[in-house]
Length: 191
Image (cartoon, rainbow, N blue to C red; front, top):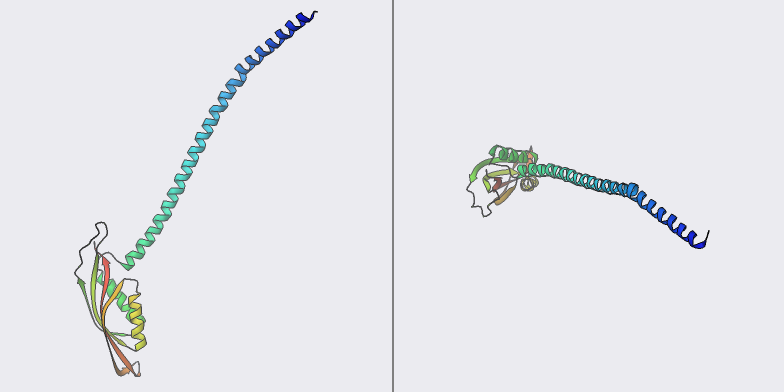
């Protein structure tokens, strides 16, 4: 065979090989590549959906925990500032503070004080219970009573007091007896 016919034949074989490669590429590789792209897009969409749902679940769980915490905060606020005057609770708290500090309560008056105008539209107004009472006991017990009254669960503010001392029979022996006349306010949330 001559060199020119060998060249033509090798070009023909190379052309047939190229056509075969193009047929294989068009028949097998290109559809498989398109299918791979489709699967990658589906996988990416599924991952995005999973991440979005995971984030939504985390946000719902966080909101649930925040709501639980808000409920706890609301309960604490309801104890410190109950809704409505709830004079029975006020009387019970004063009685428990009196009993725990070993003082004697001589007189007690609880009345609903007039409310001030609310300057904030969305905030509830605070109502006041006016307290006027007198307690007597040793200096330490009266001092501890005042401290306990001001740090009581329900918000109480002593607005005025009058302190007097004397001597008497107290607790089975002779001791100095002190009397404290107190004017105070207990706060509550109006309905």
